[in-house]
Image (cartoon, rainbow, N blue to C red; front, side):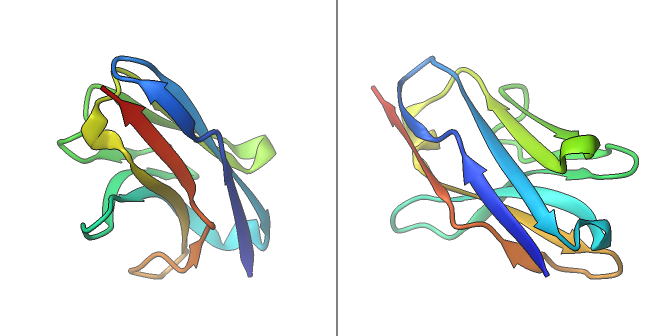
Length: 119
C-alpha cells in the first residue's frame, strides 16, 4: 500500500501562484510514477501532469503546459506541482496519484485538495 497526502491548496487571485505537495508513505519503492489530476464541478477528472521517480521524465496536459511544473524529491518521497499564472478555469479539486511499477493505471490516490482561483 502507498499512502498519499496532498497539501497546499487554497484560494488565490487570477495570475497568482500556488504550490501543491504530495507526500507518499508506505511501499513507496513500488511506485514508478506520480501524477497530478484535477476535477472541476460537472467535469471529468483529467490528468494534468506526471513524473517518473527514476528518470524524472515529465508529462503535461496542454491546458497547463508552460504554467505548471511538476517535480519530485526522492529523498522526501514527495512530489510537487508549482502552479503559476493561475486562471479561474484552473479551479478544481486536485489529486495526486501513484502508479505502481508494471501497472498501466494509477493505483493509489490522495484525498484531494481544493484550489480556487478568483477572477
